[in-house]
Length: 417
Image (cartoon, rainbow, N blue to C red):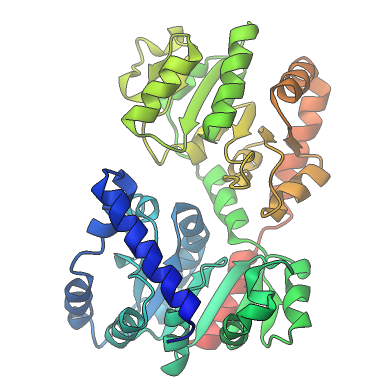
């Protein structure tokens, strides 16, 4: 057992999930049901390809999986690794459920609860030749077991801050495990300096593979004729991965203003309950994407996206994007709309997202504090074509200046395999 408090927190989390599932929490039920009989399923899968080398990727959720995809595709193209099994695990149901159509990975699987016995069984059965983690999903029983079995570990696109728990005096046991990761690739020099202070070995800067992914999406975008018809030649604002604060701001703005603009709402939560809440809150006619047709699209002003998977390419039709999570320090992907030269708005709590500050500093993003701030800023920009052009140009230049992280991570993979 690594640490009593860690053991207690893991068990308490499992208990909390179970209680939530009993009371009908859908995500909690999916979390539990997705892990049923995981040991048997894992044994059966590995038995079928036991002679093949295996690379294990772990992504906490859907956003992290987007960072993994460019690396998976790079590895698949490399002739010497085409026979390797690419095994991907997820912690959250949203990541798992929305990844299963991605066929470049050989297997999609839920990460088991990070107990010592689970970690032991998982690593012994999976027998990975390399374990690759994105960002900062640190599961210490699993990491400790990988190190016991001398499986190389690679973390990439990591963002470290001096105030994180790993660097507290009471977390020395965590720091000791992190120090023995074979290679840590950080988002930037600032993160690297945090680890340098603690004498980490094999630390270098990779940048963020999401930049490569959003560039790929922009250059090979999916087309949505219904949305193109809906937009027509009218300016379009997308509220992407929205939470309630962004939805409330936009609903109030639409209520008070009569701008010649079309709206697309793509909420983070697409449950029927939340979709109905949005329809009620906006107090104006809107149509769900599932009900949109070429015959009725042109006559609509507000489009509600009721599915997952479209958003990244939808930004090609937008002029403005208002991204969710920025009022709770859980900011969603601002790079996708920037790659399509959108004017990107988001809330003022983004300390965990260095790309947000950098986009602002580069003149390609705008942080807002509240409704009044949004109203004033948006109205000013809406009629200022010169400023719009400058911000859009800056946003795209910002994205392309960070191209190439995938190649750096791939080179690290080759050294560890």
